[in-house]
Image (cartoon, rainbow, N blue to C red):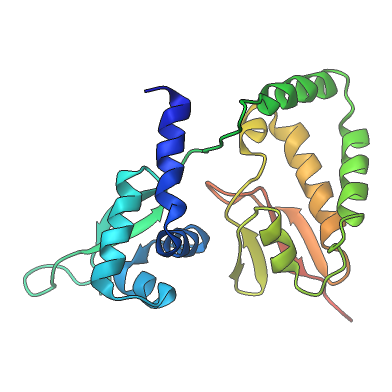
Length: 212
């Protein structure tokens, strides 16, 4: 089986609408998710949720850990709960095959070698500001539509996913600077984006601007 075939099989698991709802809920959650919470979010029974969650684990889309939710230990503490979270890694299919990642890597290398960081940030900020929803009141919806997977952390908004993860790993200064500028364009007004890396997530978080 080729890598493309394996990815097709993996993504085929999400053809079921219940599994899509469960996957989206777990992927968007800032912490690991138990079966009860997932079942309630998807509007299904706990046993059905367990079945579909485990299918997502088998497909490599979710990972599992075990932990006592009560925090108690020792006799009488009960069995550890089975918890789910999104698996690491990226999965993309194009028909026919395309190689946009290779082009992105080549362009990033040229920009970095030429020292064009500021020019890239200016273009990214303008692109964000030109987005049709850039001035929308619901900044979380705007960022969610761009793949950032936002969630609330107190009064701040943090981002579980970096849409540019592969390039950011290879060209962190260039791509993270571009990303910050893009979000500044996407989320003007009352929000203040800043570099604040989330382990396993995005390098930017947003906080409300202080008013005097």
